[in-house]
Amino acid sequence: MKTKITNIGSIVTWSEEDQKVLKLENTEILIDNEMISDIAEKVDGAEIEIDADRAMVTPGFVDSHTHPIFVGNRSNEFSMRVDGKSYKEIAEKGGGIISSIKGVRKASEDQLFEYGMDHLEIFLAHGTTTIEAKSGYGLDLESEIKSLRVIKKLNEESVLDVIPTFLGAHSFPPEYSDNHEGFVDLVCGEMIPAIASENLAKYCDVFCEDGYFTVNQSRRILETAKEFGIAPRLHADEFKDSGAAELAAEIGAVSADHLMAASEKGIKAMILSGVIATILPGTTLFLGMNKYVDGRKLIDSGCDVSLATDFNPGSCTIQSMPLIISLAVLYCGMTIEEAFKAATYTGAKSIGLKNRAGQIKSSCFADLLFWESENLNEIPYWMGSDRLISIMKRGKLLE
Image 1 (spheres, rainbow, N blue to C red):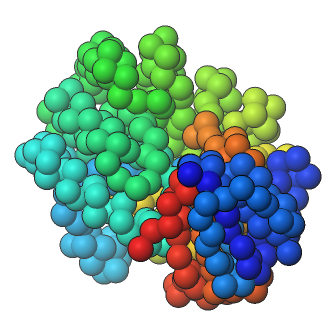
Image 2 (cartoon, helix red, strand yellow):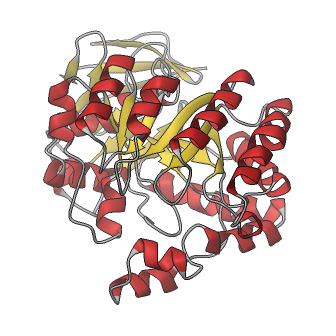
């Protein structure tokens, strides 16, 4: 079944071919089932016609770093931070990542799926049509597999495309608090082989940070994942320069994320190795920190930059990519066009979908947002008040 979209105010998309954001006017879009098949002044051969009512049309957002598999919330920790406690202090008191373990371990797959589906509906309401989703709140074999099975089911049954990442090395669980190497043995010797045998993860991530996984431990985990056909990505240098950016380059990671404390040496190594820098300004805001990643410097140095929410229960509950774009242009030195590219095209590139999502062009999924806006500037301008009219996912206009 072919559908055409007419009466479009403008089409705004990053163009890989032209290496710039294009604004196309007096143009129609032809969709063949799930895919865009033609973009032209007039398209023919459609059985269904959709009137865009002069809306601005953009690609759906791609959120390339999320942690949506958890139960409940950690608003008590938010209150502690408001009262002056640091993220590290909260973790030392049993909060942080560890506090989410109990709920995930106790929850059934059905319960985790129900919570996850609720989270995905909020992403979609803000125009996100594709996400990367991490495990990492189970931290034992059974719970990590359970979490990844839930992610697989969400991909199959939700509207969004959900790309799975194994993050068993998110922290050390209480039972391994005095045996960190033993936990690394578990991740490498049991978790990764079991996950690979069920084909549950496209990527493997590690929280490489002072107080979490060392560079050597992270290297061992990611090398093991690569042996099993699972591509590496990395939480890198969020609070302190731990050498994680250099490791990302050495290991051939697709993306290194956070990077607030990454060194110039690490960034240069990433650029030479083609590692995408995924920056997460929502986390900086949510944690009440003042040091945002210098996106301007990254881009001017030649680094590919993507934007993501880092949605999780402890350090960032933001699910709106328009708000993330606002933060990137206000505090990370990025232009609106650069932030838009980072939230669409580069995000898709970082999860292996650059020719399927994040652009409006032939051969891409018809993941489209219809805006009550005249130009791209309005997306970050209406901060926290999205001007979305409607959303299309894989050629289907959603209610």
